Image 1: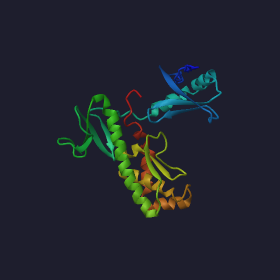
Image 2: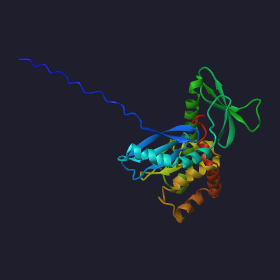
Image 3: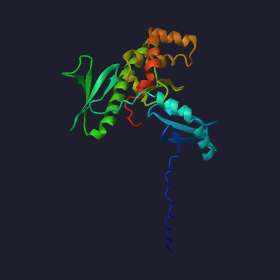
Image 4: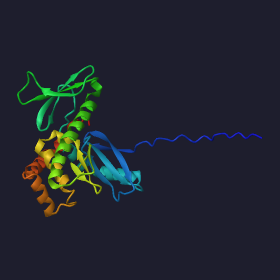
Length: 259
């Protein structure tokens, strides 16, 4: 006797539509992405520094009506924060942006080729250029990927130098697009950094590398920790001042004009 087994059909998984709310800010209506978290204890509204847009975080059980009331009650705060954002610096042909603290002009070239950094033959003496080959619609992505590689190179060199001086060794070095922290050191000794540090002057990147390497010895911000930082970078306070004054502007680099 033969038995035929028919494979049961499983219902297709539905992709959950991202939740959004709308709020009037001045004369414009803005869509606000909503993130629900089982770890959230209260409703919070913030600006995502990477794209310049608002994000609302909610505990899982908060109703949509409650969230709408909360968002509306904070529309004035939101308008003020959006008005304070630095102007976007999109990656476009002919545009400029900072690289290692110096002004760089973007030059797009059709056809195959790598991203190349070079001097401008007829440009200002203090301005250099980055040649980006390929299709125009891929310019921003290709340039961002190249900048991440540049950041990884510079940060790895700085971390290795400071780690050798302290006699420590990180488990790994990661470069990411962080929204708030310039760097971090995990309990597993993994150092993570924002790729946007490559846009800042070299002494700023070097300070962040020294800061996180010092955490490999002191996982705190005690007086002993700052002594280690000062030993690795005697002028670290200059970098701190620069970050406090100019750091927010780095998040505008690569952001689309409408974002």
